[in-house]
Length: 228
Image (cartoon, rainbow, N blue to C red; front, side):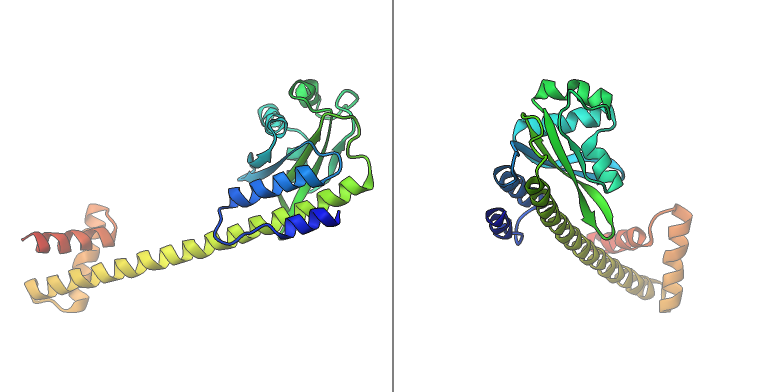
């Protein structure tokens, strides 16, 4: 357990994509969680699941089998925020459509740990094994919970970075729009001897008349002046 935590703490977040970080975590989880042979991370976007990262083909195949059926332990763990364990797919009575085919992709037992995020769950850490009851011991559960917390932190960091980037982009667009509108107003004021307010009303009227954004109308005026 200590070795797993040390490896997880060494994962670098800065300057890397979320996929790169999560792929590292699934590799470490597969090596460090007792019983794990293949690991994946299911994230939910608009309630639609997708595998954000995986280590080993068995995990990816099992995830996709659940997505195809429309339900399964990884999806229910992610949506419900509950930990779900299958000790033997041959004896499992939940998710009959899934367990009927899980052994075909190599799965005999699994552990699905929800990813906590802002009081809810955004997906699940999915851990698979070809052995029966591979995750029945407390060590596997503890390791799975610790890993899920690291995954949630990685996703939260990526989300915060995206929001900051989006805010910066929107601010840049707003500043560019304001600059081109001011240019267009200046052109109209010079050409038609209008006040600033009158020039803006001309732009606004054209925007409504042609059902185009004010910025696009202004950009057209600026471009036509530069061309001439």
